[in-house]
Image 1 (cartoon, rainbow, N blue to C red):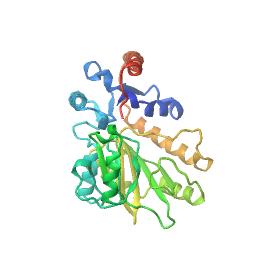
Image 2: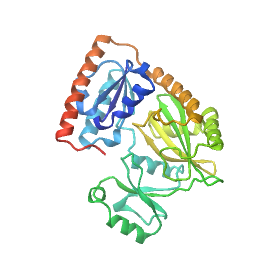
Image 3: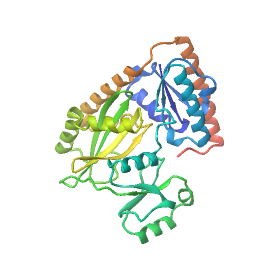
Image 4: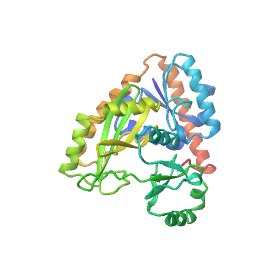
Length: 323
């Protein structure tokens, strides 16, 4: 069994993947909310993945770290131990200090004469940039002064120096790969004319060839394995670009979107994405601890379903969604 620890508001990543792309893994992967306080009741033998770490508050992070220590002491496999898996800002600082990323990310209150252009974002959010590129200190000051108060007061509001990774044709390509334990799976190469991209807006012959070559040749495998290893991240998706052939890491997401929605998937990409899903499912199978009593895990699943219903009722009535 694989236990996937995740915040309740963002468990849709795994649930959508299992429902749409990997129903055969439903009996092998058990989502558990951090809000269920699994450290108080769950200690069955399994592989435990700690995802969504950057979204935990200080108390939750401490409890999750103590829980991971306990699981390790029992001899269970733990991926992304919260004590050693870096948050977004710490990761970017590390990548800059080691020369992998030439650009910097820093809290708004600490910005030391940034190299323009820059953009704003919430370091622990998955929503990308806040607004367009900013080209001067005057423009930055104005943008900050006019932010929504909730964003302006966020502890993880950061400034990021822009890194131009356009190729010779003026396109941006966002490459992604997923690490699952010891396996690294190439996931996609999305082409666009936009520097901040979530979905490909160019799917022509050239873009398809770039993606196919990346997925099947995967020339960055060794370099990416090294980045994951030195960053102490066992599970997650790395998003990166190439600048003059050199890797520039945008982020490593510990609770990523595993696969795109099948509806709307461009026919020219469909076979490639199906192949990457086969690789991803095999990677999950490789970390599955198949020991354990099925009746005990059925009890865990029922416990989770009850907690999920209670959580969403409370969420609807009283709680604010996590970013």
